[in-house]
Length: 320
Image (cartoon, rainbow, N blue to C red; front, side, top):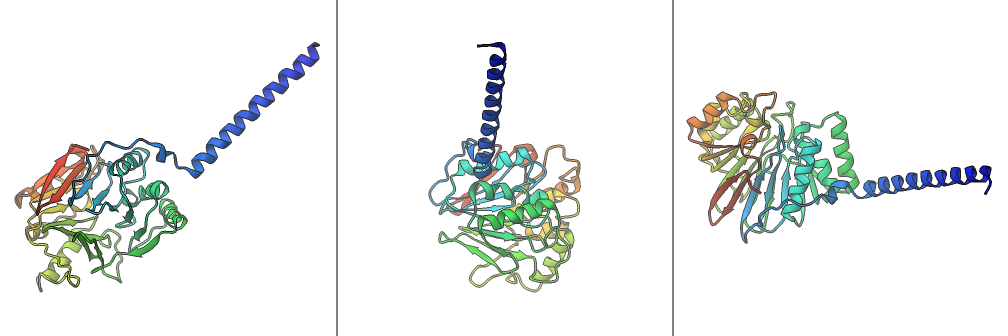
C-alpha cells in the first residue's frame, strides 16, 4: 500500500470511529430521553411496611419539604417533593423505589420550588394517577416544567380546597382544612393544610402557612370544634398526636395560640442543615417545647418515619 493509500485508509478509519462515537452518544441520549436515568438508580433498603400499618415518611431533602403517606393498601400520597436539586431528587427517587409503592397520588401544597420541584422527577420516573395542583400558580420556569410533566403523563388533576377528602378502604383518610375555594391571594397562606387520621391517631400536616392563617383558623374553631368536619370524616385538632410544623419552623408561623390549641405530642420539622434562613427559629422551638411537644428535625435526624398501627404509633429518626 502506497503512502497516499495509507493516509486515505487512516483518515477513513478516523472518520468511522468519529461516526461510531457520534452514533453511540446519540443512542445514549435517546435512551435517557425515553428512560430517565434515575429509573436506573438502586433502591434504598427501606424496611417493609407491616400488614395493616400506615407510615408517614418525612424525607430529608435539604431546605425543602417532602412527606410520603404510605397507606395500608400499598398506595402512596407524595406531599411535596423537595427543591428539585440533584441530590434531593436522587434521595427521593431511591427512597420511593425502596418503598415499592403500587400507585402514586401527588400533592403540590403550594407553588414554592422547595415544595413542588422534585415532583417533576417523580412523574418522569413513576408517573401518577392523580396530581393535586396549588391553589395559586407560579410563573417560574420550574413550575412550567412541572405542569408540562403533569400534562405529558396524562394525570388527572385537581386542586385541594377545604372539605376535600382523600379516603382509603383501610379507614385512613385525609381532609383538607385550608385553603378556601376562592379569594386566596397569599401563596404561603393558600398552601394545602391536611388533617390525617388512622385508627384514632391524628396528624396535621402544615405546609408554609403563616401565623395569620393560624389565627384565622382558630377564630373559626372558636365557633365549634366540628367546623372542619367533612361529612362522615371528622376533624379534631385539639390535642393532636403529631404536627408537621409549618414553614420549616420559621418564626412567622406556629404562633403560641395555635400551638396551645393543638397541643401536639410530637412535632416534626423539615429543614436543611446549616440553611441560610436559620430554620428552625429559636422562638419556634421554645413555643413547641412550652406545650410539651417532642421535636424531631430532619436536619439532625435525617429521614423520620412514623408507623401507625393498633391505635398507636412509633417514631424513628435517621433510619431507612
